[in-house]
Image (tube, rainbow, N blue to C red; front, side):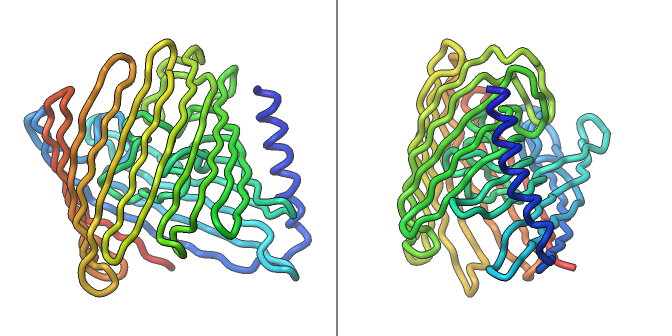
Length: 329
């Protein structure tokens, strides 16, 4: 499988370098900054993050988001993305570099190819951008990855899309040994046009045990084989998303379920009220995690978010407040 991963990367790279004969078309550069503070009943005091101590999101940070497109006579043929933060880890009292997007994407006659650090082809996280949010979907609960290192393929159709990826299975960190993760997702419906999208996903491979950027066990002895169904549905000012995953991790059953509903108010949906529920059963441990949040756009570039979450396995109540700035230069 490691050889197959190299082949995918080589094919993607070949399509990217074909862009050398085209001219640069557009560049977008955004600055991102956030302040986060909250309270945890488990720690009985203030926290300066929205998740657990090992989670990447969200922490006090500053960073940037760069997207550069290349075009030719027929339109866009390639793009480069790079999204980076410097976050302050208050628990360890150190600055933590955080790399999110780091990819090259190229268009070919049969579809789009990417190489680098990008989204795998599994579940809602394959297209749902929650990079700046306090409330998070299933990858933050240990099912799937928000982003991973490797390469992939995607093809859009008039009534859906197809995505394939072959990655390392290490998430934010990087290790290339005997580890690999293959993923695939097919969907029906275009959310921005049809107001719904229904997806069927599969992923399988051998992955090491990771937490955030830390790879705790470099031996990829955990076999993963999981299938999933997800749906997104918008109606008037109401947004709903749901996902169910089932399979095995190692020699144990793995099950996850997720549902979120959001209601938008005011012009340009400046106010959003959200509630969600996540259930996970992995490594023989089940956990119920209900949560809620409020998002208010103070200006076009500045957003205020609040979050509440409860974990049944630890009986932790956690609240967080975030002031998030994202503006172009």
